[in-house]
Amino acid sequence: MPGWNRLSAGLHLDDMRKFFEDPHGGRDYTPELTQISPGDIIGCGYQFADGALFFTHNGHRLPNAFTGIYLPRVGYDVYAAIGLDGANEIDVNFGSLVFQWYEGNDVAWRVDGHVGYMVGSGPGQDEKLPSYHEATSRFR
Image 1: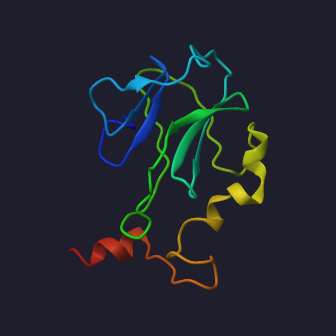
Image 2: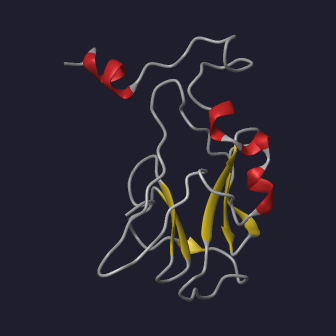
Image 3: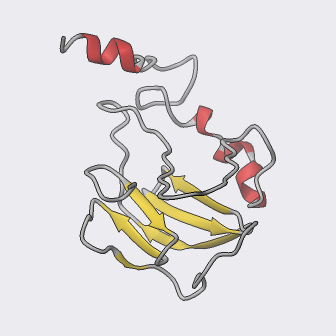
């Protein structure tokens, strides 16, 4: 499950605990989120400026779950993950629809402006990162 392995973080909705590289029970997250119901919307956000990872619930930003997480953009690709156990029905929005958390719809939060490029000022001015296939082919 996300959060149990190295370089992964997650919010487990069965017990509302947050996990970061922790397969042994996680930590309490926030008293604002004690349970979810069918139809609730959970989101996840990351602030590149300070390495803060946070979650949202039904459009409300919750407190930072973790800070100081600096994504290793040069050495690794970064992916969103959803872990499920048992019968579930979910809808996923990676930005093709309007986000419930209103601020997440601002261009400053768009992933394409933050990832995929070496450190610098962005598309067109920086060296583009290699694809996963290109990066792993050198180790074969």
